[in-house]
Length: 157
Image (tube, rainbow, N blue to C red; front, top):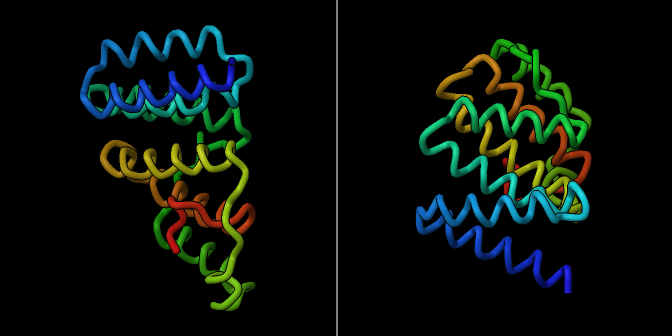
């Protein structure tokens, strides 16, 4: 009954975060992090924990998100760019696609990539406040990953 238990813990943690019950969220998170079989099984709990941290400790929340993304092969450290360069690189990337190709891009189906996109979306918002020079690169990565892996609810199109 592992899959059912994991889903129930994820849902309970989501409810705890929604209700602002950070003590319950912490207890639920600790259980999943300790007993989760794979890193992928722990991703949603890590995301919810990062969201909870954002309320009071935004720099820690961002660092946690950056660490998770690095574990998924999406490196964000050391990528401060100016806005104009990111806009130009994004325009260059999009120039290879027609409007119809972009609008008809397949939906994202990889659950690990979908949670990575959620992390990126959350990071983009937080980084605007405390690391504004890194924020354009995060948005650019969201676009790149959307074109490569399909559109998700976080995709900008």
